[in-house]
Image 1 (cartoon, one colour):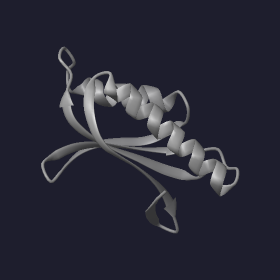
Image 2: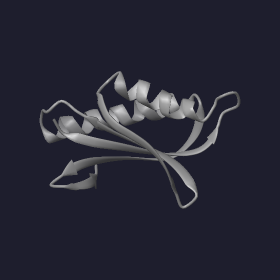
Image 3: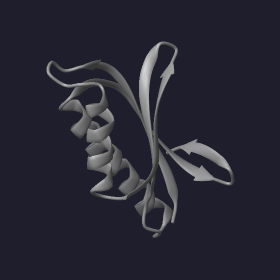
Image 4: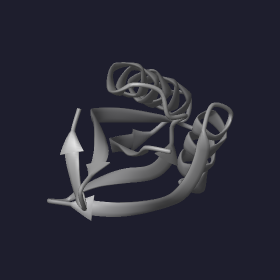
Amino acid sequence: MPSYRAVLQITGLRPGHPPERVMDAAREALGSLHHVEAHQIDVVRGVPQITLRFLVEAENDEAEVAAARRAALVLQDAVEDVATTGRLQVLRRRRGAWIPV
């Protein structure tokens, strides 16, 4: 199964939501579509970002990338309920490297 990463910048919390709810919302949304292998929170140049690694059913490259992009948008939409977001990236694992799709 192809492995993907969704990387989403978090620019703020919406009122009434604790910080841990951001990752919970992301995992729940993405997990409803694909198997989530790992997740983490980092701060890059002062901006928090969440990264979730997930698997997509093997088909052909075009279908797999489309499924990964749709899943990342579902993740972002769910996170937007509890936080404001910035840039969203989708990356695919190829030959030991993470390549933007």
